[in-house]
Image 1: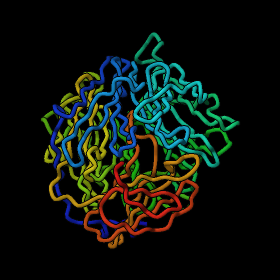
Image 2: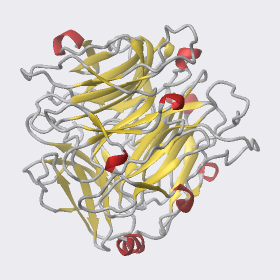
Image 3: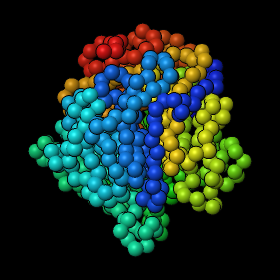
Length: 523
């Protein structure tokens, strides 16, 4: 397997450059702030998704003790970023910590699972960026907890998704905020296939701040990874749950090869970085970020992971700029190709929990650019995105449909920041809307693969979850670099591999199951 890794790295596109971003916070119209004290020291996510079917992604921002807000995308193609606050979308809610877009009812209109301090909300998309409460219609029990994480998948043969919700501290305990963790919940479809059954507690739970359904061993059955923040004195650690269809959830343990890992877990990002077909996972924490790789990838692999963060240059354990030498606090993480060179880069949002004196106060976000040899180099300052605000959630997404990924960062107690990607002479990119008929129209749980003439293969698992308190839906972005002609395929959630189809070049495309690749045209 090491030989495979070496070959993959040698095949990667060369000619890395520094990405460039222009901050447009003052003019973009994203006038929102994630505010609040104890109950909002965690969370603060952004959901980026297209809710009016024009191809451009809207931005939903958690408000904490204020009101959450949906911002309609008015950006001209390739132009400055411009948003308009929606006034009556149905998403204007209090006590929101985060949200994830998901087509729950498979009607090809994205819905939103809204996480709150209090009852969580399943908000059904009605089209035209209007939403309505669907908890009762779908049998979705929103509970009454302090929710901070979410992930979703479709189990084999299911019409409705399985949704995991991660909860934080029991805020009613007298020793708040240092009380016990609330059980996480697993919402599986009901027996009638008409909605959700009563949620199952995922016991033990250790204050989850990120969750991700992922097919870690390419078995066709995703497991649920949970990144946890607390209760080490009660056995708290990172977790992975086995979810066989029709069977109760069961934890992977030492007998399976799972090694206890105790960090202040805050965010998860997954991506196949070395071309071996298996995802690596970046786990954010306080001064102890990890990059995990399967120790022995291949059929029959056990969940034994090696930490390669130091080797690859992504420890990000102290501030890279600003002079504060105390340990960092990392939250949202996302792999994405910021310069379109064909290699996944890594963005990490940072910010002190709440004036914790042993950790950095001036703690700027990281932009770690992947090089041809598989290592990463810090380029946030050169790229123009250094900020000393207290970050939480974030999103890299192409907001003006120019083929370059822009950046939105949600800060605690200060306004959202936004940067437009203006990298000069960047290679092109291909972006895909992936569709299949029937349940799970967005093919959650599948894999997107792009193969270029130089032999390099980019792979992206199609997931809902991860990050910190928010995520991106819609266009799947892959930079084309200088790897020559390319072809693309989808491995669908049922394991069926689609045919390789030639890519005509950079652009926006629809990949629909059983149909030829089609160039997307704006309505």
